[in-house]
Image (cartoon, rainbow, N blue to C red; front, side):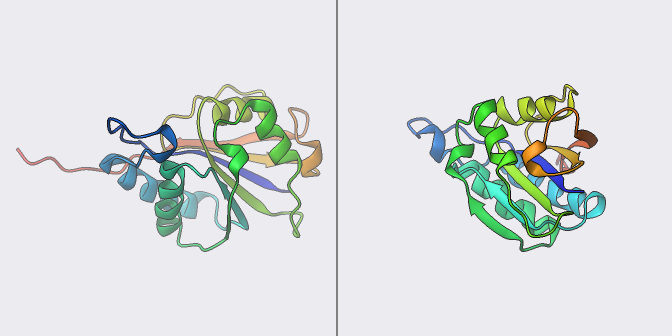
Length: 166
């Protein structure tokens, strides 16, 4: 069975005058993205393909996520993930073509689309916060992914532990 891992990008900064697509990760986001990768290594295992939005914050999330995950899957910048509608996301998932029937594919994307995708596929309401992860099992082919063939396996929000100096 294929597995879809839906990841909402980690916490981004909002510098004045910067276009949305160019927003970088905040310090907390960088740490949370690595923690998300560690969680995926422990709970999901491998990854065959990772699709990321071309936004700076998703690309930075992807790089740090993979550092924590300890993997180097095929990474594809998928332009349709930026400002994607639910319809766009469903077309991306249903259009996946993987060599292995049990392939794991990760999407690093944005809300509200990422959360809506999980709900559309599983029928479960999951509000993905920054660095949020949903693991979805697909019974059958990618092309047939919907609420009758998908189930939510795990949901998690990655948060790095921080220490505060008093």
